[in-house]
Length: 176
Image (cartoon, rainbow, N blue to C red; front, side):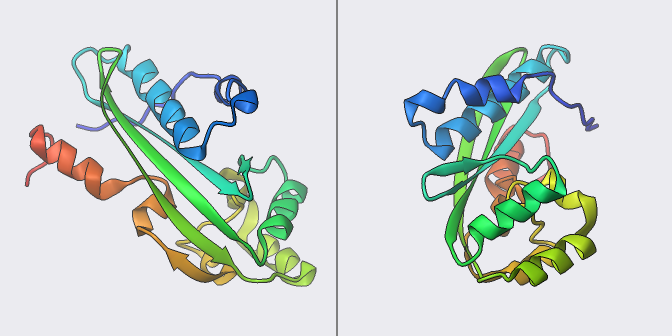
């Protein structure tokens, strides 16, 4: 049986701890994924708990989910015509201890985007894009933003699923 539980962690505080350290996206995503998995696992004795996180990096800047439509517009204007990386990390924990960690990256090239295109995209995509770093969902209208994608589809969606499934098969959690 699987249950979804949000982690009661302060992501902003964790991210702020990396501000002056020039930490890379991999380290930030891995730390957040582990913090989530470990925090939730303490409330479910003996259970394997999966935590995941994703960081977008472009030109040395780490992006968060936009807080408003105006923030989404600014993100898309900033990313338009540029390459960026999505780093997705996953951690499996049990009883407050991390057992397994993995991260992967995908590289994406966003097309040049006019302000009119961005406004139309945001109108059609709706508020759901506020829940996505980079202000897009590749599995929906967001695919129209890109000219090139290099990387695993599931990593782009935010979870390196194939390595996670391999781990879960090795531990008898899923049939294999």
